[in-house]
Image (cartoon, each protein chain N blue to C red):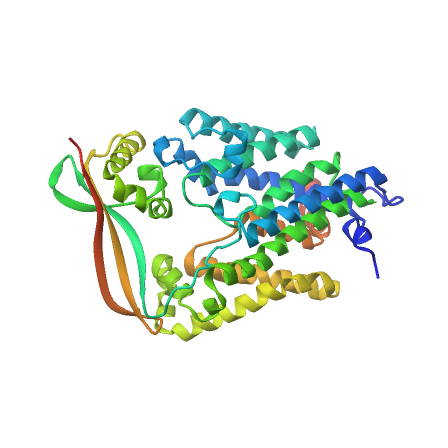
Length: 284
Length: 155
């Protein structure tokens, strides 16, 4: 039986966190420029619609302006590009964290908060704590293991605590309510509207989802092989959700990669790439 | 590939502040889930799709209709998206009390629309409509009811 402290610092390959960091900072650029742009548009909304969150009240954050959103957007992209090169991992990483969190804050301080981004905040805060890390470095490190463990905990908390929130806000009757009917009415894709004709299937899905979310912490207690299948299962769930109501928890999907041996996948990709290149070099 | 050397250990102090940080974050997320609300972001409860919808009530969806400068007599549906008014539907739905109390705030949407889509005809009137799709036993009955919540006209 390992102690909680030993478990929190279970050594992991440095390269795994280096790759998670690359994916995370690459995602930041995608997210800021293309995926989550509502904050940018708030620069154009009248300040009357601004509703400061607790964080903004404490830090005295102002309503959005075009200048502010443009500065945050491109400042975050620049910091993420520097972080991607592997230089100044702590300074650039901290700048990305501040820029991205502030940009999200602006997106959420106009009345609608998205609920898929808490674990990504944790990752941005903790990824810089590792310092220099090279993706081919297979040394085992407690600092690397800590980052992975914390991100894993936050990712699973997203499921478990959302089940808790369903009980708190929707009551136990949530599982039998018409929540998914509502979701499909409001934003169902044309090829999934048929679900409205089989309400019992949507209700069964609610039961399945609720049970899976409640049971999600079991992922920390199962053998490695089962753990990977559980992660694949969640990815399948998110794919189906996207196909049905075009909602995807993109940052959270990146965080779920913290469960997988991504440095091995990177090695395989690199090997395939160099095999593909070698014949070309011979020809040249 | 760099060979795996000896395991890199953290100093006790490095472990203490890291563990402390995790405890703080945990407290934030647990607090947010149990007593917090959206204003606690990033510690707000993970409440996506957490509300219950009665299988025998109605699903409401908010929309706007506008009068355009080139055809001011006619109400036409307009997209309620960040790209057109700087705000999205859920954000307007969250502020219906404000809009009911003071419909002139809708004028700011027309201003934002002018800045975001300067080549489109200006909006000289906006009204907010709640469209309710009635349900029975979790299925749509086909009946739809509209309620106009607030209306604004350029002066």
